[in-house]
Amino acid sequence: MKAYRLDDFTSVDDLHLHDELPPEPQRGEVLVRIHAVSLNFRDIAMVRNQYPVPHAKGLIPTSDGAGEVLAIGEGVDSFKVGDRVMSTFHPRWYAGRRPINLFQYGYGAAIDGWLVEQKVVSQEALVRVPDSLSYEEAATLPCAAVTAWSALNEGAPVRAGGTVLVQGSGGVSIFALQLAKAVGATVIATTSSAQKAERLRELGADAVVNYREEPQWGDRVRALAQDLGVERIVEVGGPGTLAQSLRAVRPGGEIALIGFVSPEGGHINYLDLFMSGATFRHITVGSRESLMDVAQAIDVAGIKPVIDRVFDFADARAAFAHLDSGAHFGKVVIRCA
Image 1 (cartoon, rainbow, N blue to C red):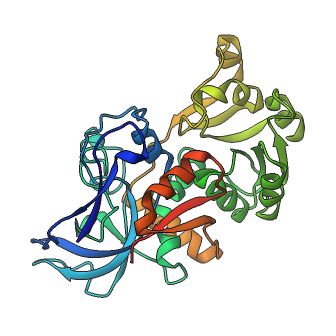
Image 2 (cartoon, rainbow, N blue to C red):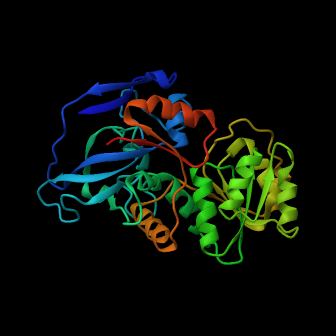
């Protein structure tokens, strides 16, 4: 069996392929033949040694995978051989309030992840793949789709007629755009590329702001939202975008704090923070229940995950490098079988 391990945190060259013994499922466990894995920004952050959660060297990276059940252990009653399944991002967060020990079980950070040909997983850490999705499409859901779902539905859910701002064209932002449009919300997107702007419009964005042409894009977003500001911001940039998000948000709106894709940023003006009246909600992906909910929503609405490019298993390093380049639109996927 082939498995990739990240032996250090200096570059994608630290990702090495290993020959390992195939695992066997024990009681309550499922053996999965992995067909596809998708990459997230956290995987690049680990390669750069910039991931803010403790992460160990030598682990199999990645958190998001989909595959076929090859065998089941004693006592497994949720799945049978041949079922199509996908991972949950947090293997020990089933529903409800976030567990306090969440990061002790993070794939690729604290325990082995999914960039491997076969993996044994607890039956409680898997969800069925909707019939409408391929393995490659299903592999994009566990982190990006669940994060977008949590950003739009934790607290007061976004409803028809609501206004949402998404930043850029990564996996979380595109899923947020698709899910928000599915419930009838107005969506404004930011990007730095005219070509990406056109593709965002094709996906349903009602307006797109080029942040390179308009560095003070927060004021432009507010103007586009009837000079009131948007009700929900899916904040993936972090330090580099939060100051403008404060100018774009409607008084009493919500900023869902998700990532740090833009790590370099200016000073946050306290008065802007105070006067925004915004609620700041920390999003840490979501639970198994959330994955089940968003999978059902995607299936019913007929949403197709946007995949930028699919790499072969042998080209995993190239997949990481492509994501790191920032040239992608949507998700980067590795086909394992």
